[in-house]
Length: 217
Figure 1 (cartoon, rainbow, N blue to C red):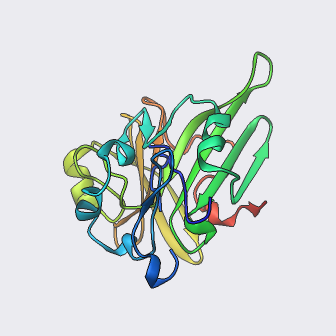
Figure 2: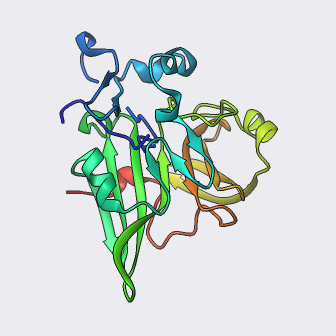
Figure 3: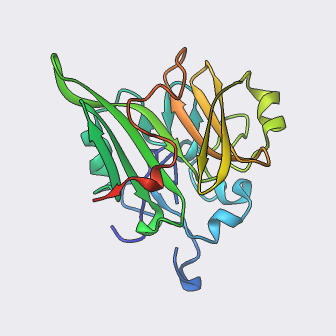
């Protein structure tokens, strides 16, 4: 579906999770309620834009879901909603799938990290969901572009990881409630990860941060 990233209600939408020309600057709903976000949408007020859609389609629930995508969901169901991934990686029963808004790597993305129990269950289940669109929000109103100070007023977080991308430094702050926040050098959130409660969000076998570096399929 052109112009549509169907983010499972994260999701992934997560979310929305997300274009092109000026003549197509408004988000459009697909047949199943997922939303495509224009580039201009990413620069408008998340609060104003959210009013156009069902909040549930953009809701981030720590330890549970990002939009329509939920933890422990069969990955095949996510693929049915979002279509063929724009990129990904896989090894040892673990995999990552990535979708860009309008298939444009300069726009927002939704990605999932899945795990397959090689010995008992052939299904690949969603273990983590990562979104970059500010349209995804927690019930407290936290979203990408929120500052670290704002996040810390709503969540108890601790620094768990640091990484570099394109020469820039990023830091990950994690909450045991099941949500992680990736912050840039100005302490502004650039991505949010939903993961299982009680676990650390960086516990992935494959690289899950700079997902735009993954192999294009």
